[in-house]
Image (cartoon, rainbow, N blue to C red; front, side, top):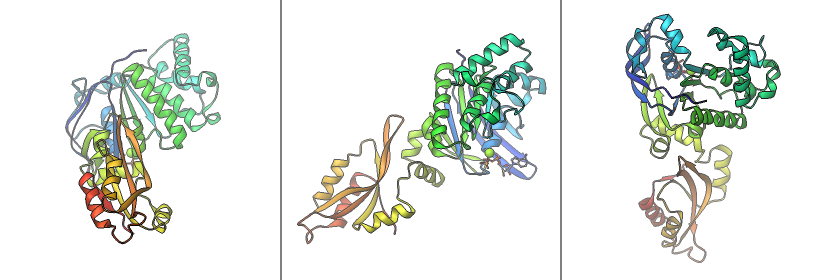
Length: 343
Ligand SMILES: Nc1ncnc2c1ncn2[C@@H]1O[C@H](COP(=O)(O)OP(=O)(O)OP(=O)(O)O)[C@@H](O)[C@H]1O
Ligand SMILES: [Mg+2]
């Protein structure tokens, strides 16, 4: 199974619903075979953006180009042909409860007029590909959420799409199941070269799968970049908030209370590639101070480390009178970004 990915471009795209502005001046290119994660809070315009791609919504102005062709000018008949090359998966799976798994996967092939024996064989092959070869006869109510989404994915792949659109496809699943579905989407991307646009409000989904990401706010794209760029150096307040939620880098609630109870001066530092934890510790020691990690984690995003650590600074043993913690904080600030933990 090898397809080639669609190239997708939005140019000066605007969308209004009557008085409501849903999208403003969207300019974005998704390269063939790329996985783009689009993230934003509720009402940001994510679903509207994805619905523009398969022509379910028409632009108020601007263009949506698929492999260079503007879909705005297409007739309903042309759009139906186009949608055959676009797979779509949904938050609530949208399976037919009256059809078993294999007949759900066959559905788009029925619409395309593929003869019965051929579509059966293809659907079985797809169910095997998504790891459900033995569930062909099961009805949706007999399947778990993760299994239902795999059936949804098999169905989306039936017509050999070159573009796959996912709107909150893992939002109804627990983290383990989400990880399995994301692995499957990555495999589809690698093995078939399908371009994927994935919409979510969950930064860990973007982190787990996307090559590039776009952040939406109030109908605009406010930030784009590689996932690592945006994580390590968010340019906007909303970007910073998403980066923070993904890593749970600053202790919150009960965690914060217990970190604070143990005393010392608490600072949160950013760890990027090039930040040497041993050097930070030496800088603190030069001012009679120990720096120990009280909270946090460093992850590897796109082969680069990124994380934030909360450090507890206190006098080195025997240097209680001479330790200069302010000077230690200043020395660490020379090496990386530092924030004091508010109480
Ligand atoms: N058919 C419509 N008619 C009128 N307004 C609409 C329509 N569809 C969307 N909107 C408006 O456009 C804006 C963007 O909605 P959209 O559904 O794209 O947001 P979203 O980012 O997908 O949010 P969520 O995370 O809640 O799914 C909202 O203000 C919404 O009310
Ligand atoms: Mg939505």
